[in-house]
Structures are given as structure tokens and as C-alpha cells.
Image (tube, rainbow over all chains, first blue to last red; front, side, top):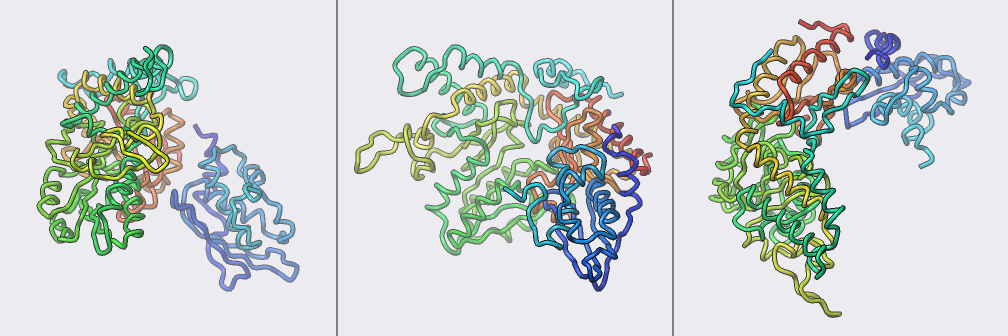
Length: 131
Length: 418
């Protein structure tokens, strides 16, 4: 039963890292999934090389969406926007260490979608940019 | 363990007719299907009726002279008669086969609505409504410059009838409401509401998608002007639904979809419409599915809708009681006496997606989300809920399994159980 809810996911859900707001922020964006109420707000501070020096996220939702946001924010710290541009669905699933069906996939990808929209103006769901 | 009173229907025997229930979701984990409000399982008799049509009687209906065509036509029209009798319609001409309840509502909105709703007119809906009994009216109102009002839900999750008289006025042309909420199980006081609407000069459409499958229905006795329901929620196949309409109304309504079969005569200049009910059935219909729905009606009648309603009343009472033992679990909706067997609930600290996922690991099929009722969830202040729904083939020990699985899920998330 617990394969989906590995310790990693439950750990980040119960004890999320980088939760909060940044003010001021260089990039600030939020989005939600109206189908289920998952909601994520992301703030980034960048240095002169467009490297992420500080990140904070806020939101509510299911364990997958919240853990995904927490893990993603740890991952992007210290990387430049150029380096992060290629992040996609498979990277998120790799970070979470699980496979997901189409409904829960959206939960996992919401934080990445917010990052991509805020940083690059890409508003499609990650993985569907070409459609 | 609960011992069912002897006079209740025997779900253990009934479920043997529903072969899809006999499967394991994971090795050693049997299916516990608690999502009948989304769609019901089908008895073998329905599957055989559909299969029989395709194996023996497969032909198009109404026009053919050959034997298969006659058999197919007879079976299709017999299915219509069965449905008419099942809901107390005075004539089978008042039964229009459509794809589902949603299509039935769209038919009324476009055919009756466009000819009868004008600027300044009002349509009264309720806060309980499924999107299918909301959005078609919103579109119509936008198109015609009409206003929609909503009968609110009160603190007991019942419709607040004290507001009803105030919301209905001389400009109200239509009241459309659900016979039973797909989220809260709330049973609407249909007879009362229909009487008051008629007294105010408004017509009434009843969304019977959840009520027709679960309790005895007499549309003519209720004096409903229109009623819709879906075959797939009442042990029938997908792709078939019914619009019931009073004959006098349907006679003067313009067609919905146009084409073959809904015409009597066609020239290059124009067409004459066919009689009821075929005026509203364009093209080759869902023949197999209609026949399947007829078989579903036979099945439900043999069990008895009164017995089904009584059984659901008992099992929902049992389930609500059992769920109330879990700390942190809140069931929504009225008490058992005023509701059907759909139970939406919340669990403190757990999102419906996670709940549904973990219940699935235990073989339980439930639904998570807003259940196509976003305005209701906004009123409840909840972005989403989890919903378990029972039908004639669910046993009391399946309700026990729901409680056990929920408790297990809570423990996994490190939340207080009992």
C-alpha cells in the first residue's frame, strides 16, 4: 500500500522545506488545479547570473503536490534559469521516485508548471508543450 | 458485525449477478466498489440482452421489412415501453431516448428553452446542482438575457424551502432541481417544490440521475413537466439516457437534432417532423443500449425499487454511524432519514486525492474531487471531498471495510485514529 507514499513523500508532506514567501521576489507566480484544489505559489530570488539564490513556496493540496513542491524547490536552489529550463515530467517523477497515473501526475507537476510559467512564461502543462 | 434484518434484500445474493464485482484489484485484495453514484455495475441479464441484440437481432430499426429489422424494432420499442412504465409515464410517446441525463437537459434547454425563455425571464436552480443541470441553463440565460436564481442549501444540507417563495416570482419560467444530490445524498422534497412552482406558473424539470436508480419514481404522479435520467447509473449500459416530457409540451417543442428518422416527409424545400417520440430521435439511435436499459429496468423491477430504497436507507444509516466512530472524519449531508446512499466526507489533514489513492490500495473504489458540483463545494467551503456511494449490490461488511481502510490511511499519515 505504501509504495506511493514512500517515506520521502510523507516526510516532505509533513515537514515541508522552503515553505513561505519572499518579499521582494524576482519571480513570483501561482497556479492551481481547480479540479481538486491543489494550489501552489512560488517566489524566487535570482543573482546577476540568473542563478536561484533563494526560493520559497506556499500552498495547499494533496501529499503528492505538496511533496513535489518541497522537493522541487530543494532541487532548483543554486541552479541558473538556463539550467532549469529543460526540467520536465520525467525529472519530477525521478525526484519523487514513483510512477503516477494521469490524474495524480497533474498533482506532481503543478509546482513545475508554476516554475515554468513564472520563469519562462510557459503556461502549458509540462510534457504537453508541443500539443 | 451487523446482521441485516431478514426482510431487507440480500446483497450477497444480488451481487452474484454483477460479475465485474468478482475481481481482485491487487493480489488478495478484492474489489469493493463504492462509486455507483459515478456509474453502476451491470447485471449479467443486461450484458446478455446487449449481446443478444448484436448476435441475433442486429439490424437497423423502424425502416426495415426483413425479420431482423422487425425483431430489433420490437425490442427497441419494448424497451421504451418498459421505461415508461418504470417511471409512471402515461404514454411511451413521452419517453425520448437520449445519450444521458446531460443530453436530456440540453435538449430541453435548446428546444423548449430557446422558444420560451426571453429577456428578463428567470430560471430557478439550486445550490445542490450537478454541472449538467447548471451549465446548460447558464448558457441559455446568457443567450436570452434571462436571470438564474439559486435555492440555497441550509445548515442541514437540505434545500432551504423558507427561501423558496421569495425566489420564485411571476417572471420565473422554469424550476430545475435534482431529485437526489450526487454529493450529499439529499433527497429534494420534489412534490412540494413542483406544486409551488406550478402555482407560480413555472414549469419543472427534475434531474433524476441519482433518484431514479435508487427510489420508486412516478413522474406523472409528481406532475413533473420534464425528467431526465441516465441508463448507466441504474444498472444499464453507458450511452443511453431518457428525457421524460409531458406529451402536450413535447408536441409543440421544435426538434433538437435534425436528420433521418425524426422526419415524416422531406423535399428539397423542407421537411415535416415525425410524431412523438421520434421527432426527437434523429439518426440511428443507441439500439443495443436502449435494449440493455430495458433489461436493466426488468432487473430492478424484479428486485423492487421499494426494497432497494429501504436497503439503501439501512446501509447508509449503518455506514454513517460507523464512520462517525473515526476521529477526524466528517461525513457531509443530512441524516439517514432524509438522504440516499452517497456519502461525501472529509478527513482532517488528508486531501481527497490521497484518501482515494490509499483506499484504492485496499481495493476500495471511491471518488475524489468536486463531483461536478463546484458551486456546492464552494458553498461548503471545501475545494474537494471524497465520496463513497452504495447500491443494491453493496454489503454491510463493505461499509466496515471502508471504515477499516480509512483508519489505516489515517495511521499511515500519522494522524489520530480512534
